[in-house]
Length: 418
Image (cartoon, rainbow, N blue to C red; front, side):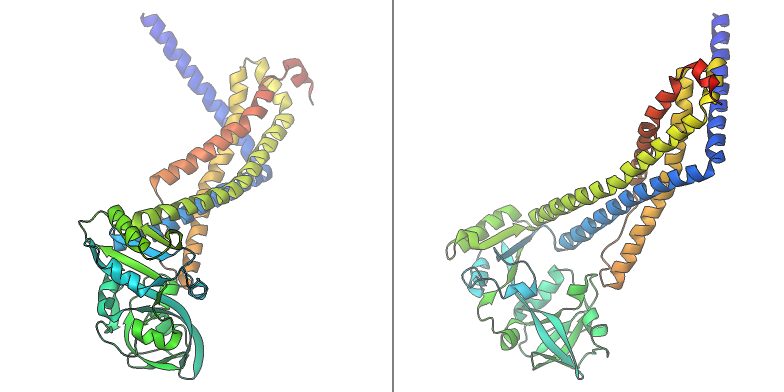
Protein backbone atom coordinates (compact mmCIF):
# COMPACT_ATOMS: atom_id res chain seq x y z
CA UNK A 1 0.00 0.00 0.00
CA UNK A 2 2.83 2.42 0.91
CA UNK A 3 4.62 1.49 -2.29
CA UNK A 4 1.52 2.35 -4.33
CA UNK A 5 1.16 5.73 -2.57
CA UNK A 6 4.83 6.54 -3.23
CA UNK A 7 4.40 5.58 -6.87
CA UNK A 8 1.34 7.88 -7.22
CA UNK A 9 3.18 10.75 -5.52
CA UNK A 10 6.14 10.26 -7.82
CA UNK A 11 3.88 10.22 -10.87
CA UNK A 12 2.04 13.39 -9.72
CA UNK A 13 5.37 15.11 -9.15
CA UNK A 14 6.55 14.14 -12.61
CA UNK A 15 3.31 15.44 -14.14
CA UNK A 16 3.66 18.73 -12.25
CA UNK A 17 7.22 19.16 -13.47
CA UNK A 18 6.17 18.26 -17.00
CA UNK A 19 3.41 20.88 -17.13
CA UNK A 20 5.72 23.50 -15.60
CA UNK A 21 8.15 22.91 -18.46
CA UNK A 22 5.37 22.98 -21.04
CA UNK A 23 4.04 26.25 -19.62
CA UNK A 24 7.53 27.79 -19.63
CA UNK A 25 8.02 26.65 -23.22
CA UNK A 26 4.71 28.19 -24.26
CA UNK A 27 5.38 31.52 -22.53
CA UNK A 28 8.87 31.77 -24.04
CA UNK A 29 7.46 31.17 -27.51
CA UNK A 30 4.76 33.83 -27.05
CA UNK A 31 7.38 36.34 -25.86
CA UNK A 32 9.76 35.40 -28.69
CA UNK A 33 7.11 36.23 -31.29
CA UNK A 34 6.40 39.69 -29.84
CA UNK A 35 4.84 41.34 -32.89
CA UNK A 36 2.47 38.48 -33.66
CA UNK A 37 1.49 38.12 -30.00
CA UNK A 38 0.92 41.87 -29.68
CA UNK A 39 -1.33 42.00 -32.76
CA UNK A 40 -3.32 38.99 -31.50
CA UNK A 41 -3.75 40.56 -28.07
CA UNK A 42 -4.81 43.84 -29.69
CA UNK A 43 -7.60 42.12 -31.62
CA UNK A 44 -8.85 40.54 -28.35
CA UNK A 45 -8.67 43.92 -26.59
CA UNK A 46 -10.89 45.52 -29.25
CA UNK A 47 -13.43 42.69 -29.07
CA UNK A 48 -13.69 42.50 -25.27
CA UNK A 49 -13.60 46.30 -24.84
CA UNK A 50 -16.50 46.83 -27.25
CA UNK A 51 -18.61 44.16 -25.55
CA UNK A 52 -17.88 45.43 -22.01
CA UNK A 53 -18.50 49.08 -22.94
CA UNK A 54 -21.85 48.28 -24.55
CA UNK A 55 -22.99 46.09 -21.65
CA UNK A 56 -22.17 48.59 -18.88
CA UNK A 57 -23.60 51.54 -20.83
CA UNK A 58 -26.88 49.79 -21.67
CA UNK A 59 -27.21 48.62 -18.05
CA UNK A 60 -26.38 52.13 -16.85
CA UNK A 61 -29.04 53.61 -19.13
CA UNK A 62 -31.66 51.19 -17.85
CA UNK A 63 -30.67 51.92 -14.23
CA UNK A 64 -31.02 55.65 -14.89
CA UNK A 65 -34.52 55.15 -16.30
CA UNK A 66 -35.42 52.79 -13.45
CA UNK A 67 -34.28 55.29 -10.83
CA UNK A 68 -36.41 57.95 -12.47
CA UNK A 69 -39.52 55.77 -12.33
CA UNK A 70 -38.76 54.33 -8.90
CA UNK A 71 -38.48 57.85 -7.49
CA UNK A 72 -42.19 58.28 -8.28
CA UNK A 73 -43.04 54.90 -6.81
CA UNK A 74 -45.25 52.04 -7.86
CA UNK A 75 -48.38 54.18 -7.42
CA UNK A 76 -47.73 56.07 -10.66
CA UNK A 77 -50.06 55.63 -13.63
CA UNK A 78 -49.41 57.38 -16.94
CA UNK A 79 -52.19 58.34 -19.35
CA UNK A 80 -51.67 59.72 -22.85
CA UNK A 81 -53.29 59.86 -26.25
CA UNK A 82 -52.63 56.72 -28.28
CA UNK A 83 -50.50 58.57 -30.85
CA UNK A 84 -48.75 61.03 -28.53
CA UNK A 85 -44.99 60.39 -28.45
CA UNK A 86 -44.01 62.68 -25.56
CA UNK A 87 -42.27 65.15 -27.87
CA UNK A 88 -43.40 68.77 -27.46
CA UNK A 89 -42.99 69.24 -31.22
CA UNK A 90 -45.37 66.34 -31.95
CA UNK A 91 -47.92 67.25 -29.28
CA UNK A 92 -49.79 69.59 -31.60
CA UNK A 93 -50.05 66.92 -34.31
CA UNK A 94 -52.20 64.60 -32.18
CA UNK A 95 -55.68 64.61 -33.71
CA UNK A 96 -58.46 66.46 -31.94
CA UNK A 97 -60.47 63.23 -31.70
CA UNK A 98 -57.79 61.39 -29.74
CA UNK A 99 -56.61 64.30 -27.60
CA UNK A 100 -57.19 63.96 -23.86
CA UNK A 101 -59.39 66.63 -22.25
CA UNK A 102 -59.28 68.40 -18.91
CA UNK A 103 -62.70 66.85 -18.22
CA UNK A 104 -60.99 63.43 -18.37
CA UNK A 105 -58.68 64.52 -15.56
CA UNK A 106 -61.62 65.70 -13.48
CA UNK A 107 -63.43 62.37 -14.04
CA UNK A 108 -60.33 60.40 -13.06
CA UNK A 109 -59.99 62.37 -9.82
CA UNK A 110 -63.33 60.89 -8.72
CA UNK A 111 -61.88 57.35 -8.56
CA UNK A 112 -61.63 56.55 -4.80
CA UNK A 113 -58.14 55.04 -5.09
CA UNK A 114 -56.77 58.10 -6.93
CA UNK A 115 -55.14 60.69 -4.68
CA UNK A 116 -54.33 63.31 -7.34
CA UNK A 117 -54.22 63.79 -11.10
CA UNK A 118 -51.57 65.94 -12.83
CA UNK A 119 -52.71 66.96 -16.35
CA UNK A 120 -49.86 68.48 -18.35
CA UNK A 121 -49.32 70.20 -21.69
CA UNK A 122 -45.99 70.45 -23.51
CA UNK A 123 -44.94 72.86 -26.24
CA UNK A 124 -41.94 74.80 -27.47
CA UNK A 125 -42.13 78.57 -27.08
CA UNK A 126 -40.02 81.36 -28.53
CA UNK A 127 -38.34 82.88 -25.49
CA UNK A 128 -36.64 86.21 -25.07
CA UNK A 129 -34.34 87.27 -22.25
CA UNK A 130 -32.44 90.58 -22.24
CA UNK A 131 -32.68 90.90 -26.02
CA UNK A 132 -31.58 87.32 -26.79
CA UNK A 133 -34.00 84.84 -28.35
CA UNK A 134 -34.06 81.07 -27.82
CA UNK A 135 -36.66 78.30 -27.97
CA UNK A 136 -37.57 76.72 -24.64
CA UNK A 137 -39.49 73.60 -23.62
CA UNK A 138 -42.60 74.69 -21.67
CA UNK A 139 -44.60 72.47 -19.32
CA UNK A 140 -47.96 73.55 -17.94
CA UNK A 141 -49.78 72.12 -14.94
CA UNK A 142 -52.69 73.29 -12.78
CA UNK A 143 -51.44 75.60 -10.06
CA UNK A 144 -53.65 73.95 -7.42
CA UNK A 145 -51.29 70.99 -6.95
CA UNK A 146 -48.03 72.11 -8.55
CA UNK A 147 -45.94 71.57 -5.40
CA UNK A 148 -47.44 68.12 -4.96
CA UNK A 149 -46.53 67.26 -8.57
CA UNK A 150 -42.93 68.34 -8.09
CA UNK A 151 -42.70 66.31 -4.89
CA UNK A 152 -44.24 63.26 -6.58
CA UNK A 153 -41.72 63.53 -9.43
CA UNK A 154 -38.86 63.97 -6.90
CA UNK A 155 -38.02 67.41 -8.30
CA UNK A 156 -36.81 69.88 -5.67
CA UNK A 157 -36.75 73.65 -5.56
CA UNK A 158 -33.22 75.08 -5.39
CA UNK A 159 -34.18 78.69 -4.75
CA UNK A 160 -37.20 80.96 -4.73
CA UNK A 161 -40.77 79.66 -4.56
CA UNK A 162 -43.42 78.16 -6.82
CA UNK A 163 -46.83 79.34 -8.08
CA UNK A 164 -48.62 76.61 -6.11
CA UNK A 165 -52.31 77.61 -5.71
CA UNK A 166 -51.57 81.03 -7.25
CA UNK A 167 -52.54 82.17 -10.74
CA UNK A 168 -50.59 84.70 -12.76
CA UNK A 169 -47.69 85.00 -15.17
CA UNK A 170 -45.17 83.22 -12.94
CA UNK A 171 -42.49 80.80 -14.12
CA UNK A 172 -40.38 78.16 -12.38
CA UNK A 173 -37.38 77.14 -14.48
CA UNK A 174 -34.83 74.36 -14.56
CA UNK A 175 -31.17 75.05 -13.72
CA UNK A 176 -29.99 74.50 -17.30
CA UNK A 177 -32.50 77.06 -18.57
CA UNK A 178 -31.33 79.47 -15.88
CA UNK A 179 -27.58 79.20 -16.50
CA UNK A 180 -26.79 77.72 -19.90
CA UNK A 181 -29.46 78.55 -22.49
CA UNK A 182 -28.91 82.29 -22.61
CA UNK A 183 -25.59 84.13 -22.54
CA UNK A 184 -26.62 85.91 -19.34
CA UNK A 185 -27.86 83.93 -16.34
CA UNK A 186 -31.55 84.17 -15.47
CA UNK A 187 -32.05 85.14 -11.82
CA UNK A 188 -35.02 85.22 -9.48
CA UNK A 189 -37.29 88.17 -10.19
CA UNK A 190 -36.14 88.51 -13.82
CA UNK A 191 -38.66 88.77 -16.63
CA UNK A 192 -38.72 86.06 -19.30
CA UNK A 193 -40.81 86.45 -22.45
CA UNK A 194 -42.62 83.36 -23.75
CA UNK A 195 -44.27 83.95 -27.16
CA UNK A 196 -44.19 87.71 -26.46
CA UNK A 197 -45.88 87.32 -23.03
CA UNK A 198 -43.86 88.39 -19.96
CA UNK A 199 -43.40 85.89 -17.10
CA UNK A 200 -41.73 86.60 -13.80
CA UNK A 201 -39.19 83.95 -12.76
CA UNK A 202 -40.02 83.14 -9.14
CA UNK A 203 -38.27 79.78 -8.67
CA UNK A 204 -35.30 77.75 -9.94
CA UNK A 205 -35.27 73.96 -9.60
CA UNK A 206 -32.47 71.60 -8.68
CA UNK A 207 -30.93 69.53 -11.47
CA UNK A 208 -32.46 66.11 -12.13
CA UNK A 209 -29.74 65.03 -14.57
CA UNK A 210 -31.74 65.19 -17.79
CA UNK A 211 -31.05 68.18 -20.02
CA UNK A 212 -34.59 68.39 -21.43
CA UNK A 213 -36.13 68.43 -17.94
CA UNK A 214 -33.43 70.74 -16.57
CA UNK A 215 -34.04 73.26 -19.37
CA UNK A 216 -37.84 73.27 -18.99
CA UNK A 217 -39.99 76.22 -17.99
CA UNK A 218 -42.99 75.42 -15.76
CA UNK A 219 -46.03 77.68 -15.80
CA UNK A 220 -49.64 77.26 -14.66
CA UNK A 221 -52.18 75.76 -17.03
CA UNK A 222 -54.24 78.96 -17.08
CA UNK A 223 -51.20 81.10 -17.89
CA UNK A 224 -50.17 78.66 -20.62
CA UNK A 225 -53.46 79.18 -22.50
CA UNK A 226 -52.28 82.72 -23.29
CA UNK A 227 -49.31 81.50 -25.30
CA UNK A 228 -50.39 78.14 -26.78
CA UNK A 229 -54.21 78.29 -26.98
CA UNK A 230 -54.70 74.59 -26.18
CA UNK A 231 -58.16 75.15 -24.70
CA UNK A 232 -59.36 72.09 -22.79
CA UNK A 233 -56.86 69.73 -24.45
CA UNK A 234 -54.32 67.80 -22.36
CA UNK A 235 -51.18 66.10 -23.74
CA UNK A 236 -50.39 63.83 -20.84
CA UNK A 237 -51.54 62.90 -17.33
CA UNK A 238 -49.97 61.28 -14.32
CA UNK A 239 -52.27 59.63 -11.78
CA UNK A 240 -51.03 59.35 -8.24
CA UNK A 241 -52.88 56.49 -6.63
CA UNK A 242 -53.06 55.97 -2.87
CA UNK A 243 -50.16 53.98 -1.42
CA UNK A 244 -52.34 51.09 -0.29
CA UNK A 245 -54.06 50.83 -3.70
CA UNK A 246 -53.29 48.15 -6.29
CA UNK A 247 -51.78 49.96 -9.29
CA UNK A 248 -53.14 47.47 -11.82
CA UNK A 249 -56.64 47.74 -10.35
CA UNK A 250 -56.51 51.55 -10.47
CA UNK A 251 -55.32 51.37 -14.10
CA UNK A 252 -58.32 49.20 -15.00
CA UNK A 253 -60.68 51.64 -13.28
CA UNK A 254 -59.05 54.53 -15.15
CA UNK A 255 -59.60 52.70 -18.45
CA UNK A 256 -63.25 52.16 -17.52
CA UNK A 257 -63.73 55.86 -16.69
CA UNK A 258 -62.08 56.99 -19.93
CA UNK A 259 -64.03 54.41 -21.93
CA UNK A 260 -67.31 56.10 -21.02
CA UNK A 261 -66.54 59.20 -23.08
CA UNK A 262 -64.01 58.12 -25.72
CA UNK A 263 -63.06 55.32 -28.11
CA UNK A 264 -60.99 52.53 -26.58
CA UNK A 265 -58.07 52.84 -29.02
CA UNK A 266 -57.59 56.60 -28.51
CA UNK A 267 -55.77 56.47 -25.18
CA UNK A 268 -53.11 54.52 -23.29
CA UNK A 269 -53.15 53.75 -19.56
CA UNK A 270 -49.81 52.43 -18.36
CA UNK A 271 -48.61 51.62 -14.84
CA UNK A 272 -45.07 52.53 -13.79
CA UNK A 273 -44.22 48.83 -13.61
CA UNK A 274 -45.44 48.04 -17.13
CA UNK A 275 -43.86 51.24 -18.49
CA UNK A 276 -40.52 50.17 -17.05
CA UNK A 277 -40.96 46.66 -18.45
CA UNK A 278 -41.65 48.11 -21.89
CA UNK A 279 -38.53 50.27 -21.74
CA UNK A 280 -36.50 47.27 -20.56
CA UNK A 281 -37.70 45.25 -23.55
CA UNK A 282 -36.72 48.02 -25.96
CA UNK A 283 -33.31 48.43 -24.33
CA UNK A 284 -32.76 44.66 -24.36
CA UNK A 285 -33.44 44.58 -28.11
CA UNK A 286 -31.02 47.47 -28.61
CA UNK A 287 -28.44 45.73 -26.44
CA UNK A 288 -28.80 42.49 -28.42
CA UNK A 289 -28.31 44.33 -31.73
CA UNK A 290 -25.29 46.26 -30.46
CA UNK A 291 -23.74 43.17 -28.89
CA UNK A 292 -24.21 41.29 -32.17
CA UNK A 293 -22.25 44.03 -33.89
CA UNK A 294 -19.60 43.95 -31.15
CA UNK A 295 -19.53 40.15 -31.46
CA UNK A 296 -18.19 40.56 -35.00
CA UNK A 297 -15.00 42.02 -33.53
CA UNK A 298 -14.74 38.96 -31.26
CA UNK A 299 -15.12 36.67 -34.28
CA UNK A 300 -12.34 38.62 -36.00
CA UNK A 301 -10.25 38.27 -32.84
CA UNK A 302 -10.88 34.50 -32.84
CA UNK A 303 -9.77 34.23 -36.46
CA UNK A 304 -6.66 36.20 -35.58
CA UNK A 305 -5.88 33.79 -32.74
CA UNK A 306 -6.46 30.74 -34.96
CA UNK A 307 -4.18 32.22 -37.60
CA UNK A 308 -1.53 33.00 -34.98
CA UNK A 309 -1.60 29.49 -33.51
CA UNK A 310 -1.58 27.82 -36.96
CA UNK A 311 1.41 29.94 -37.91
CA UNK A 312 3.10 28.91 -34.67
CA UNK A 313 2.40 25.25 -35.51
CA UNK A 314 4.00 25.62 -38.96
CA UNK A 315 7.05 27.37 -37.50
CA UNK A 316 7.51 24.73 -34.79
CA UNK A 317 6.81 21.55 -36.76
CA UNK A 318 10.31 20.21 -36.15
CA UNK A 319 10.06 21.10 -32.45
CA UNK A 320 6.79 19.17 -32.27
CA UNK A 321 8.51 16.16 -33.86
CA UNK A 322 11.30 16.31 -31.29
CA UNK A 323 8.81 16.53 -28.41
CA UNK A 324 6.87 13.53 -29.73
CA UNK A 325 10.08 11.55 -30.22
CA UNK A 326 11.03 11.96 -26.56
CA UNK A 327 7.61 10.80 -25.37
CA UNK A 328 5.29 13.81 -25.51
CA UNK A 329 1.66 12.74 -25.77
CA UNK A 330 -1.05 14.16 -28.01
CA UNK A 331 -2.55 15.82 -24.92
CA UNK A 332 0.83 17.48 -24.16
CA UNK A 333 1.13 18.96 -27.65
CA UNK A 334 -2.50 20.07 -27.54
CA UNK A 335 -1.91 21.69 -24.16
CA UNK A 336 1.05 23.75 -25.48
CA UNK A 337 -0.90 25.44 -28.24
CA UNK A 338 -4.21 25.77 -26.40
CA UNK A 339 -2.37 27.31 -23.46
CA UNK A 340 -0.63 29.77 -25.81
CA UNK A 341 -4.03 30.80 -27.17
CA UNK A 342 -5.47 31.12 -23.65
CA UNK A 343 -2.55 33.28 -22.48
CA UNK A 344 -3.04 35.71 -25.38
CA UNK A 345 -6.82 35.97 -24.86
CA UNK A 346 -6.61 36.38 -21.07
CA UNK A 347 -4.02 39.15 -21.38
CA UNK A 348 -6.11 40.78 -24.10
CA UNK A 349 -9.30 40.21 -22.10
CA UNK A 350 -7.86 41.81 -18.95
CA UNK A 351 -6.65 44.88 -20.81
CA UNK A 352 -9.82 44.97 -22.94
CA UNK A 353 -12.03 44.91 -19.85
CA UNK A 354 -10.47 48.08 -18.45
CA UNK A 355 -10.33 49.71 -21.88
CA UNK A 356 -14.09 49.01 -22.17
CA UNK A 357 -14.70 50.53 -18.73
CA UNK A 358 -12.59 53.53 -19.76
CA UNK A 359 -14.64 54.01 -22.95
CA UNK A 360 -17.87 53.77 -20.93
CA UNK A 361 -16.59 56.38 -18.46
CA UNK A 362 -15.74 58.74 -21.33
CA UNK A 363 -19.29 58.33 -22.68
CA UNK A 364 -20.66 59.10 -19.19
CA UNK A 365 -18.50 62.23 -19.00
CA UNK A 366 -19.62 63.30 -22.47
CA UNK A 367 -23.28 62.72 -21.53
CA UNK A 368 -22.75 64.84 -18.41
CA UNK A 369 -21.46 67.75 -20.55
CA UNK A 370 -24.73 67.52 -22.47
CA UNK A 371 -26.76 67.70 -19.26
CA UNK A 372 -27.52 63.97 -18.90
CA UNK A 373 -25.94 63.34 -15.50
CA UNK A 374 -28.27 60.45 -14.65
CA UNK A 375 -26.13 58.00 -16.65
CA UNK A 376 -23.69 56.08 -14.45
CA UNK A 377 -21.85 52.78 -14.81
CA UNK A 378 -21.38 50.05 -12.24
CA UNK A 379 -18.64 47.40 -12.20
CA UNK A 380 -20.08 44.24 -10.72
CA UNK A 381 -18.33 40.95 -9.83
CA UNK A 382 -20.65 39.24 -12.36
CA UNK A 383 -19.37 41.53 -15.12
CA UNK A 384 -15.72 40.78 -14.25
CA UNK A 385 -16.36 37.03 -14.16
CA UNK A 386 -18.31 37.15 -17.44
CA UNK A 387 -15.49 39.04 -19.20
CA UNK A 388 -12.94 36.52 -17.85
CA UNK A 389 -15.03 33.52 -18.95
CA UNK A 390 -15.65 35.07 -22.37
CA UNK A 391 -11.91 35.59 -22.89
CA UNK A 392 -11.16 32.06 -21.67
CA UNK A 393 -13.81 30.52 -23.94
CA UNK A 394 -12.55 32.41 -26.99
CA UNK A 395 -8.99 31.30 -26.18
CA UNK A 396 -9.86 27.62 -25.73
CA UNK A 397 -12.08 27.38 -28.82
CA UNK A 398 -9.70 29.36 -31.03
CA UNK A 399 -6.65 27.38 -29.92
CA UNK A 400 -8.17 23.89 -29.90
CA UNK A 401 -8.35 23.11 -33.64
CA UNK A 402 -4.81 24.29 -34.53
CA UNK A 403 -3.58 22.46 -31.41
CA UNK A 404 -5.22 19.18 -32.45
CA UNK A 405 -3.74 19.58 -35.92
CA UNK A 406 -0.28 19.98 -34.37
CA UNK A 407 -0.78 17.03 -32.03
CA UNK A 408 -1.61 14.68 -34.92
CA UNK A 409 1.53 15.45 -36.93
CA UNK A 410 3.51 12.37 -37.93
CA UNK A 411 6.82 12.19 -36.02
CA UNK A 412 8.91 11.27 -39.07
CA UNK A 413 7.37 14.01 -41.25
CA UNK A 414 7.76 16.55 -38.46
CA UNK A 415 11.47 15.73 -37.92
CA UNK A 416 12.17 16.08 -41.65
CA UNK A 417 11.10 19.74 -41.54
CA UNK A 418 14.03 22.16 -41.61
